[in-house]
Length: 415
Image 1 (cartoon, one colour):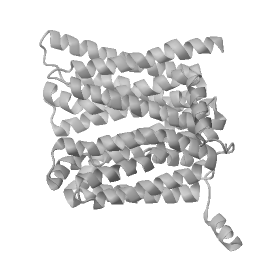
Image 2 (image 1 turned 90 degrees about the vertical axis):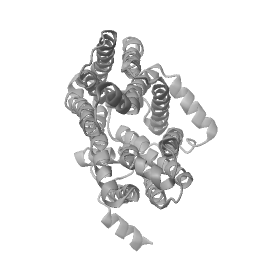
Image 3 (image 1 turned 180 degrees about the vertical axis):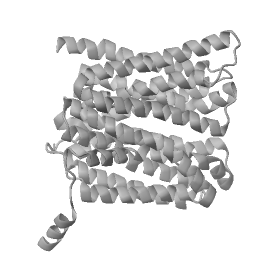
Image 4 (image 1 turned 60 degrees about the horizontal axis):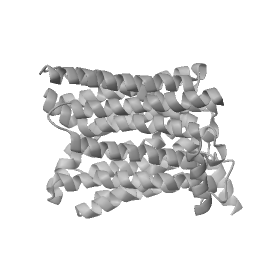
């Protein structure tokens, strides 16, 4: 037993808590979610043919993932508050890897939907615990800077994953995407096992009891600034998810954008997000979390409103404008998103060192639920114009800025 402990200690080389490598590792952990949704998108038509089902049935593999992801947000935080971040994260990554293999071996669409749900239960651990670990290790502006660097790592995934997934689909078939996800999970699990030390120094034995859990959530909901920060995070994410849900239809039907050009359009959106993340990483320590959050939320609102005005003018005057009339304002929105998400997450978690996991869980649940509701709305509202998508993004951007203006700014004055 002693020999085993010595060998384990010899192999493990934890990264320093203030190292950039650790922040990058946490960014990779949080990227499990978008990797799971974006990588296999090029395979959806082939999967429909192979399983002899329609597109709606294949789309359930996305819906099942989103449902599992949203619900499990409320579980991982309290569990990690009690048992620690590291073992909980390792469990989630192991479940993700096994479920990814299950997806690759699925013989029917029903089994694929089942394994996708389990895959979401594992991937969710990365998002919740990556943020919670950042809160454990960093304070204030340093936490926001770390989350900004994590956001940059996360932001690369939507740009790279669909391209890689397309090649894997072309060369090896749809199963290769899920096997690649499993391989990524195994590699990431080994990195966590060998390089990540336990960060939770305030374990709470009562965190997983139903009564204390509900009281923790009630305490969080009753905290005005927490509500404000979560509102900024959830509404800004809702605007981004509206674009993800409706952009392919709108850009194709309104602007005549083909599949190849659409890829470049999406890359521009990602670059806007990465630009915001870089600005946040550089400026937050000097300007502070709330000032950067104000800039980010204002950028989200301005981008959405400019998009709505441009598309309304084009529709009212029957103009055929270039697709940049939608992409350029959306880049402004995603630049604001890259600022808003890290600052909002850091601000929400900062007051709760003893229940950072619960705070991250509730925030993630609100974020994913908002995205799901907005996505469903956009799917039903889309028509032959760009107005439904533009107005939805404008509404989400405005709600993001109002969350900052009416809650964060006001409570800052009274604190």
